[in-house]
Structures are given as structure tokens and as C-alpha cells.
Length: 120
Image 1: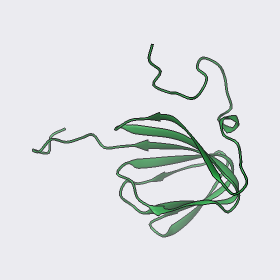
Image 2: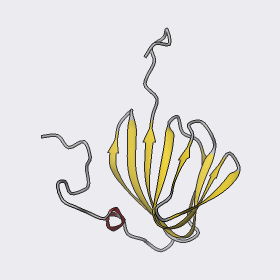
Image 3: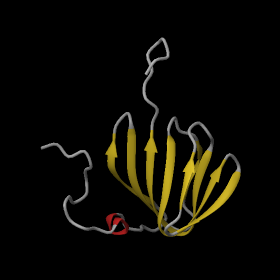
């Protein structure tokens, strides 16, 4: 049987924070699902590590799992603490900076493909 969510145990309680480990001077990631419609990835950032400003074709939701991160969306800064979430809208520049060690779940939902007439 196909597994649509991969790289993680099925049918057992887990802590997402245990699925990625902090590494000095690095950003560690583990992809759980990815296709043309969505992406689910867990990240562990060492303190002061960052994903620089970029944009995405999909809406991105960050769920803070551990620590504190600074999320910049269209040049406005937001502080995200454990248990908090924020949406980074599609096509808007955004960045992630670890103010301290920071773990997050990133969920990106991509738009449906449209045909040449603009219909979905």
C-alpha cells in the first residue's frame, strides 16, 4: 500500500520535535510529503540560522514546534513562539530566522493548475 506521508512512523503517537535534530550551524529538514499540490516539511534551525527572503507560488503555514523564530513577510517582522502559527501568503516575499534554536512544521498548499482558458 502506498504511503502518502513518508519518512515518519504510521499508526503510533509521535512528537514531531523528535523527528529532526539540531545540528551546530545548520538547518536540518525532513520532508514528510511533497507533490504538485502540497508540501509538508519539518525543520530544525540552529540559533541565528535562516532561510533568506524568497517567495512561493503557494500559501505557506509555519507551525512553531520549539524555540523562537522571526518570520518576515513583505518586510514586516513577526515573532513566533512554540505553539504559534502564521501564514505566509503566496507570491509575497518572506524569510525565516532562528532567534534561538527553532523547530517548525512548514505546510505549503499550491494552487490548482489551470488550463489555457483559465478553468480549473
